[in-house]
Length: 179
Image (cartoon, rainbow, N blue to C red):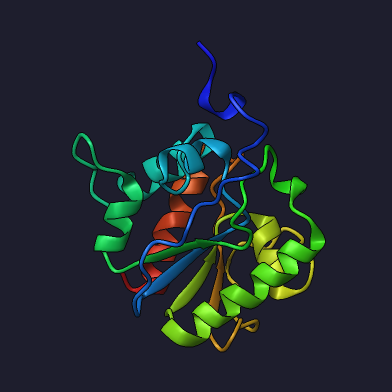
């Protein structure tokens, strides 16, 4: 059986729209959706995204979804938002073009301006670097002196680190976002 993400070239002709956005304590901002997420029409679905959702559940930020439901639905039910800089799926996050990232940054800044989240949480380092307009060098947690659109910024450390380190980062985000 062909894996859904390999059944067509990186779902380049498909996009994942933003879930409804309301005033929120935190906005999760990522780079762009993967093909699996676009196929199922839910954020961060797939091998790497599964780890993020497991962390959010284990930290107590989200409940475990019931069968037939998705984690992003529970995120929204908690009043939290989620978006991507680039709405087009690619095979790798580094495949997004600079002009797409720049346009996505402006769109996310408009979301921040309109909905005034308590904190913007960078889900991936590259997305956060685009939002900040600078490189991050080992900086994690609350970036105290660098608001984006007047909103606090949190660099979430969850991918490619030990489970306990990632879990501590999500728990710190809960404290900062007051969720």
